[in-house]
Image (cartoon, rainbow, N blue to C red; front, side, top):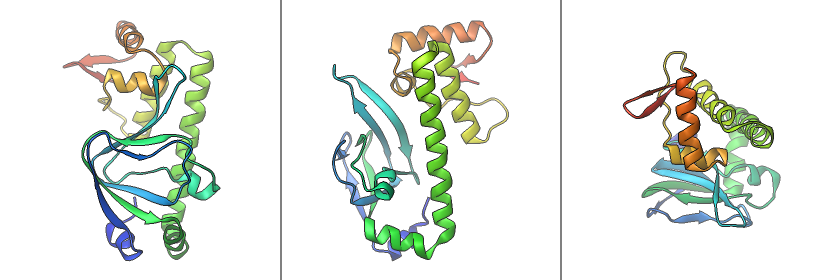
Length: 195
């Protein structure tokens, strides 16, 4: 997202995290901008019965947890590494200085946050009124659109990750994907979902 030389110029530090390390917890104050150099991070909430609802997965060059920096509110979800990861941390003050100095980067952030808001609105609607098959297809079409792929799109998520992103049980996701395959809404090739 932000070029490494730019983020380093503004004083970012590169921190190493082990697998399954909690970077921040839901309800904590937002003091840093986070950008992944290597690794994989998930942001999630825990339900009352201890089930995870994943807000998003983030990989190399992705940032995460920015909205609370702009809105001066607490983190709405917990961020945790899925694998050993290296992540840039930039103080909130330096992050805003960087955005003021680089309007092109600021515009990119605005566009990214808008895309995430659209995704959240789609998923909220799906969870409240649509059956599992519809929820899954909406998620997969959203991923394909964001990847800007017009041909066959191999979904980069496991059944477990689809489950976590849609609020469905893994067993329900497996059954729904099989049903969607029979309806020819998607294909299964070498155990991968292809849209």
